[in-house]
Image (cartoon, rainbow, N blue to C red):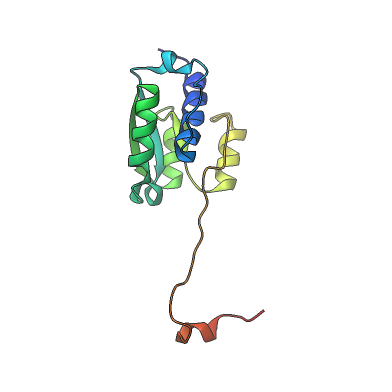
Length: 134
């Protein structure tokens, strides 16, 4: 079995590459992880977008692994990581992520994506009157 840190490092790099749509040198990590199953715990909101289907397929093809994505709330995903039952944790609660790392459960934290909330509607939307003017 390969070392979890090597697996995590290769996985994080591959996930970022897949998300960016880039193709590049894999630095030799492919041979070390080929045939392994990667457990990715992620928030239900990320899982429900369908994005992981596309990203995981590209990652699996590139590295010759299987990705088992497990949808959980942030707290549950971090607990799964603490228990050693996840190789990668993808959550969105910075203070909890920092604590997770400070406690020695994770390495190589990366910002991967962010949320934008956009209100869409007509200019004469009644809710517009409730928005503070600057």
